Image (cartoon, rainbow, N blue to C red; front, side, top):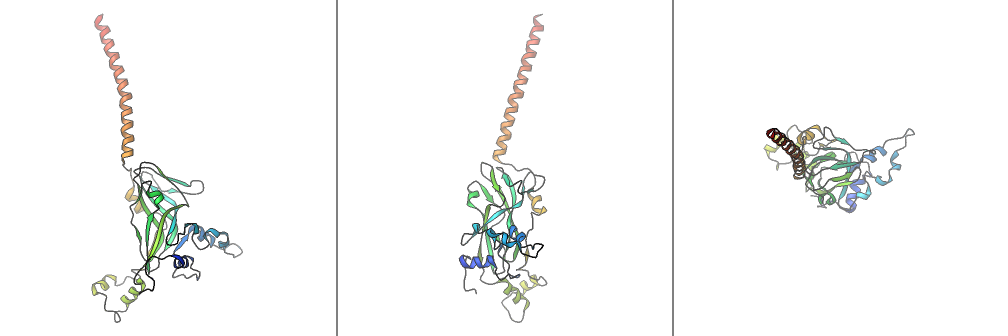
Length: 273
């Protein structure tokens, strides 16, 4: 059992984010896109990382809050009713989610959860109070490596506008009572551990790194888009449709009334003759 249990915070969280030892097995908990670019080498063989002071350890430290970390909106998003995902860049930085719309949003950062931690995720309160609801789940599995994809719904009365590269989500990490890599080792060593049920061994048999190696998303997958594709229905949109229908009825009703009056007048004139 670990000496420290609970939510990872303070010094422990900073050290897991910084990963000063450049340990490939236990990578930084959080890596932003800018940091990956900064790690590329120049023609002279120098690391570009010196240019990324605001995220010198893979994280924009403006997003660090001692026990939890804010995550930025990434470059790809999909909103119901659109034919394809929206790509956000310097020329198209803003995303609008209308009332009643579902959306898939990705984080700018990659998350690298070790086998002794799990993550808990949420939408920031700034957007919650506008009516943005996270419907995709609230945790990140141990061993997950990749971007987070949030499925959200605008349950509010107004458009929700967000900007690429700004904090929209948050995450914090909790220590497990046992590192899952230890459990996997115990599964492989049948003679040493007898607490594992045989039926569990049969389920895991032949599946390497069953608990600790979970490839995450690199972008928004097609199957998630297919699940929410189509037009969304909301009270606000139905109200707009009703108002348009009422306006159309008034217009066409006035035209029809005018035609009827004209016909009556014509028939009356013919009758007098």
